[in-house]
Length: 114
Image (cartoon, rainbow, N blue to C red; front, side, top):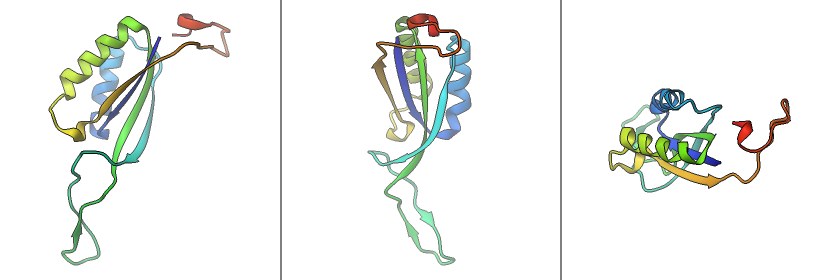
């Protein structure tokens, strides 16, 4: 099993959710996250005057989903196809190995949790 952490702009959450439904991926969690990286954030106005500053930290959405090994490669490929513009602001995908998983309700273990 693999855990995918997909960090994207919030505007693309619906697109990635539909893609996960298309591949019949089980559950998904998402969070609003803040951070900094290589992306250049747009200047922001504040204070009533024409004062602008470029924020050091940006806002993104982090999606976490656990899928089978074979499905992970397909999902990564499709997300990259949709969001792969070459712009750092479109995020990252991190893939982790899941060694154990347990469903507390059904008492299933391993791949049966999916």
